[in-house]
Length: 390
Ligand code: FAD
Ligand code: NA
Image (cartoon, rainbow, N blue to C red; front, side, top):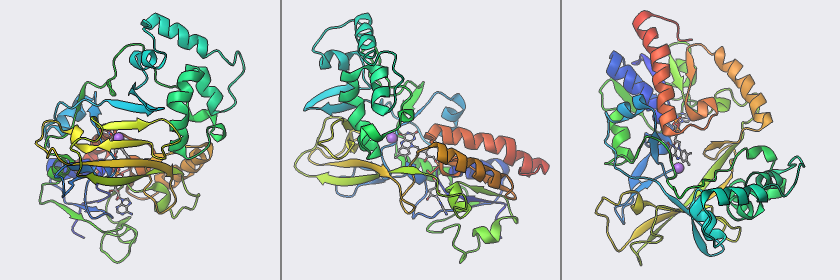
């Protein structure tokens, strides 16, 4: 065994752990990665016909207000000044997102000032009187009123869940974003941008240390290699960032996830398909939820002007062999998760981390912050002072 630490999964959680333990402590790290590349869902590649950078697992926008995370990521890449904006198509008309004063005035063909728009939406949201909302539709109406809810939220959400709106539980919506200004910046964080040379270059730089070995196309549960679960657990500390239910052979049942399908198309009859990076489709007559056009993430690059590449995004429940993307988090899931956490706590020297290992949706900056915390509070004290791993 040529490792002081085995990391399972090379997403941002695993890469951050490996980078710190190798660069800060001089320890040997082996990363086991099932896919053919590192980087987890943040990975990007150049689409060969257009030369345009494509985010393989769905568009990734970097944003954070955490100074420590911002300093950390800037060691490996600089960031462009990209600021994210989203639009939506409803009944053949394009509106700015998230719903803001511009959206409201365009929708009602009006010129409301903020207080007037607030009063209108308040009045519309009282349609059901004092009745406790009994499902997703009534909940939505009680939050933003029927007109905005039906136009911009109801069918989009139904498409995300592939379920009739009437059959969705009220609990999946607790608030719906509406802004009473014309600000349509998607993120409110202090720092935002895209890695100047791409995600692939950023993530590859994180493991540029001979102390880090990456084994791609290597599954932790496949016993035919030296770093499998049965060979390493109990022998060397492990950071596991795969699905927690899979680790325990699903003994407590499957946790539920949503996944997405991306349909890629290279267009050679135009250099600009939609004039912006993300267009949502709010209505049921279009089967996909949104279209991403990757050239618009990097207006500063010299991409060809006669071709472009898009992804149509479809959303659905994940089956066991699909990529798990968004935790659904029903009451049933939470009960299972509590049992998996108990099992995880008694697993010798195995730390469960990241999105899949904790069954939590984490943005990139959150995965990095969580990994830095694990490093500082558990791994560094372990390697420096012999503290137990848990
Ligand atoms: P992952 O990136 O999922 O990495 C886990 C890795 O473990 C994978 O590479 C997987 O192959 C590997 N693995 C699993 N099981 C095994 C096994 N048995 N053996 C070996 N390897 C295994 N964040 C943002 O900040 N901005 C965004 O715009 C954004 N958009 C997103 C869009 C989508 C569709 C998704 C799914 C996520 C998005 N995120 C975004 C979140 C971002 O991808 C996460 O922060 C990041 O994935 C978390 O990293 P991670 O290391 O926890 O998990
Ligand atoms: Na995204």
